[in-house]
Length: 429
Ligand SMILES: Cc1cc2nc3c(=O)[nH]c(=O)nc-3n(C[C@H](O)[C@H](O)[C@H](O)COP(=O)(O)OP(=O)(O)OC[C@H]3O[C@@H](n4cnc5c(N)ncnc54)[C@H](O)[C@@H]3O)c2cc1C
Image 1 (cartoon, rainbow, N blue to C red):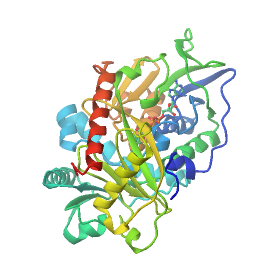
Image 2 (image 1 turned 135 degrees about the vertical axis):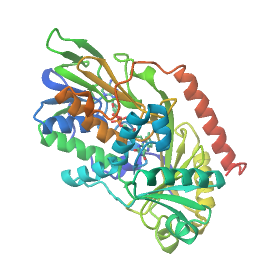
Image 3 (image 1 turned 45 degrees about the vertical axis):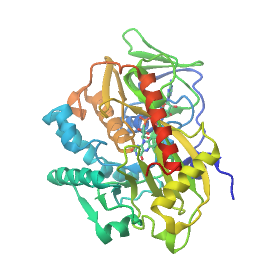
Image 4 (image 1 turned 180 degrees about the horizontal axis):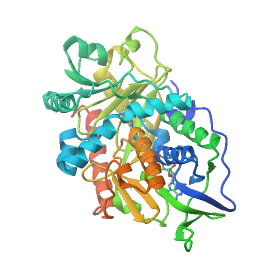
């Protein structure tokens, strides 16, 4: 049996990027982008395409954040139902956001094609799988709400549902044909390569330590060994924000998500698991995500962290989910596990900020950043070029910190751990 090791599958299988050197001088650019994930890279790309000069500073390496380690679902919309988005944001803003994020997977797949990014992109849709009667009712509501908005969604049941999901444990599933899957690290590195091809300067291992006004020249962004003077600044550091040069961390609370990947699985039983290539997740509050990769691995994931848990616990959880949904696979060998960090907000909606003139920031993707990061990066670029708030899918929010973020993180993490222990012990599931 191979050792179950702590390593991100996407990092493991994606060819390494050309190494970007740390910033070690005083640079000048039209725009300085802070954070080398999908949001920052999309902003940089779209600014460069409009003729602006860009320096991007990344604290570690490109894809170090959620962008390089996520499930790879290219989702349409937010986690919450479209009617609830409109109830929270108001009809006008809510319907704009539903439209932008509903069309976002098409944007992502078109960008991948346009830039020729090799990232296991599959536009076959996603499956939201109902695990019980309440889940079925939730999916019926989602189906009705998205159909009313003209989205290409279908509620599967009976034999068709079983055929798509590859399990008898799911009684209904919402097939969202707008969506799909990618290798998120390959997508992120592909964006970085495109930025460099367009003349963008990327500096890795360059954590920003300070952000100050540079007279009437805009802003100076400081790292340990250099600085960037820029008229405009994009802060796209998300859940991975490091340092006290920004108070962005006060506007979300951190949560974790882990994944466990099997060895490549072959044969008829394996081929029947999600046989049409969708990525999926179930309707449990502490959900399980399930997808395959190009090599036939089975990837299971859930909320919480396992980088602090023993291998036997991780194996036992993965065995339990796999044997519940796919007993036909028999004993599966688990090869890798990894954990990532998510920026949550209490209402599950993102926030755009303009902390000072010429600076834009975003947080609170709540675990949906492949599509959202791509379209927000592009919208930020448009906003900085035109200075027109109409370029943004939602208006800037006032800077209002989330109450007791550390306490919320601890509270949720304890709840997730207890739930997963319950799953292992067969108390729940
Ligand atoms: C395990 C997991 C599973 C997920 N699954 C999905 C999914 O299936 N589908 C989906 O759409 N979304 C998913 N998400 C969410 C998605 O990954 C994120 O929302 C998205 O990647 C955020 O992109 P970003 O560019 O805004 O930030 P990030 O990708 O987090 O990038 C931020 C970058 O900023 C850098 N940084 C931080 N501080 C500094 C500093 N001081 N100076 C310079 N750089 C700095 C970090 O090192 C990091 O590289 C998941 C997230 C996780 C963690």
